[in-house]
Length: 337
Image (cartoon, rainbow, N blue to C red; front, side, top):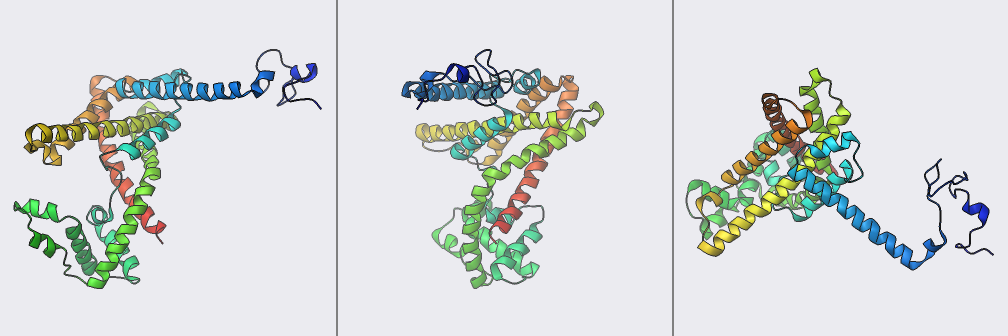
């Protein structure tokens, strides 16, 4: 019997996959590589693992570096045909998505039930849908709103007291936990909320991919006079959302690090770190600058055209996030039933 490593002259001269004659290292018909006798050794297998890991890691790091520090350049490289040094767009997006949901400080894409029940649009519809599932029967809009309000106050007592300017006491926090509505339904709503939050956390990691076609379609509407193809805009949208996830990840850790440093050196947080207002403004400005650079580098418009397109894109990002949260809500609710 012939051993795997002992190849005959005839089999060595022909492709093991399609049987075509081999004139070099690779088959000209199907691309299969010539088999060598030493490929069945442990040393060769270990070498292939190391090469695959180091090569894949190098491409990913190169892609992340280009994505962050050269806005729009990764998409231009893709359409120039220089794709070997970089990770493919979809694979890059999922790699960044995994990093974001493993390490993120900012919960931009994961919205809890108590927030969803107070968040526009479709507030009334969302409240009545959840209460119908909780109660097992239709619930009126007034009772649904009362239950949702009690649930939000229970989950956010500090925010309510902060809004009044008074320091919350133990008695006031206890009072906020007493619902004015039906206690049986309220207890069922609390139980439902725990299951909802667990499920929506898992679903948000997969559903975030929906933001890519939303952005691509939004850009396509703006660029109709220039006849930009939807396929090309999808690549740009994929790279853009991968970059935005990275920006959110890095900014969240930087902001948290600044807060911890202030606590360490001063023993108290300065006023600008005690509210989300300044952090949101800084993050918005950072995204605005990145988008402008990416749009101008990729589309090669004038600075005025790039600025207009940037404003249009920022509006699209806001609208797509709102639509994403609505979609996440309905997907989560129906996944629970």
